[in-house]
Image 1 (cartoon, rainbow, N blue to C red):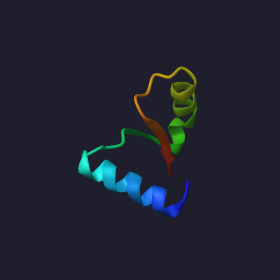
Image 2: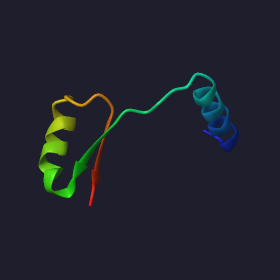
Image 3: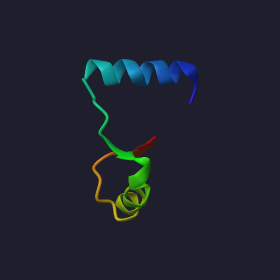
Image 4: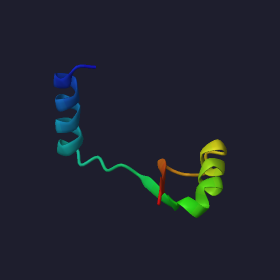
Length: 50
């Protein structure tokens, strides 16, 4: 993937209003986040924050 490819992709994502799906977990919930990824129970990315 080139920088031009990335720019084209982001332009298309903006054009079609593609929104990422993110589930935020606190650091205390890290085990739950890992389990959610392992068992594919989250619809999108699992992010752990401090």
